[in-house]
Length: 300
Image (cartoon, rainbow, N blue to C red; front, side, top):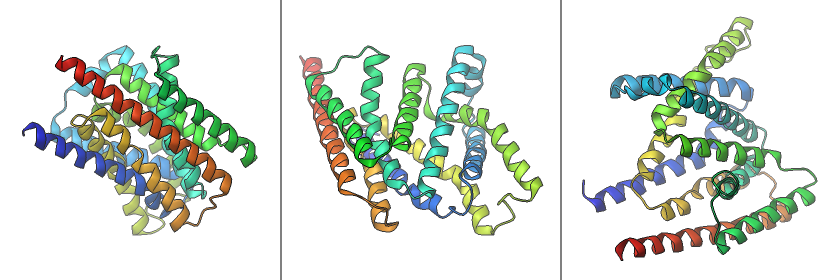
């Protein structure tokens, strides 16, 4: 595959990932009669089954090498807790009619990444990124004061996913093998909970309807396939393009929350979101400028 074809494929892969993540609330809404913890358990369990099949077909040996390394195991243990918490909170937000607050969390995530970069990786900010970070912080403070309560779902989603990304960045592990180990760590807990619910006779699997059973099983595909597309796309397109495209998902979530599920979108929320969008525009402009500067330096 030549460079142009590879880049085109990268955009397609990345677009597929963000479109899938954007419409995922609809998927979980179809299961809103089932407790979030039970949905999360099935999401983890069936993701592991799907990934196990993937490992068999691709004959991945690297996963066993990763498990032998203590430092890697510890990193993946922590990342599994973070991603499991993120998935569970996201499902809870969707099924408790808080899709808008969940989407705000994923708008904040890139700016939270900047903050972690400063604190943990000792990265330096240019003026535009610093301004973006200040505006984002002001918007969250404004929303908190006017909203009457701290937007804990948004912040927890942003913090957990940002920390998850930080661990992935510092560990340097490929997406699919890492996710396989993460689900492997979480699956015993998820499977035990599913089994416990079935023994009590309160579990939804094989007791509710064939549609629910199908949705549970396919949740593994709905979870892992977008991540695979994202990993494939991120390898092929510029970071600045990835920065633009990562806002497709939460934008679709916001529209779905307002239009499909009639969630309240107050003037105060609109102002806060507007400030976040301004911050994201500044952040993206900074990324484009820095990317072009790096290209010029390399060509010189």
